[in-house]
Length: 102
Image (cartoon, rainbow, N blue to C red):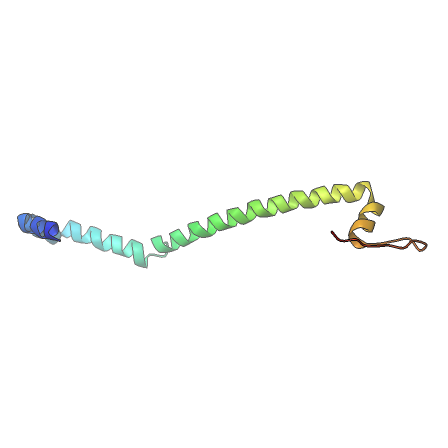
């Protein structure tokens, strides 16, 4: 705290000169407007960027699920009867099915 106080006391006239400058005041006002009040304010831009990152993560997750489902689809296409027996416990009329869980 003493550092800031000593800096202020040594540069007091310079700081007052800069703060009273109309260009500085306009720039500060513009920054406040852009950060808080503009329709594309920085806060909403950060939120949108975070949403984009989450959607990209979801996209990679869903793409991997699509690949798994395509693999299953190929498996079903090769041997439909075996797939139906294993996943849906289907059987022929003259068979008995015993399910053993590990």
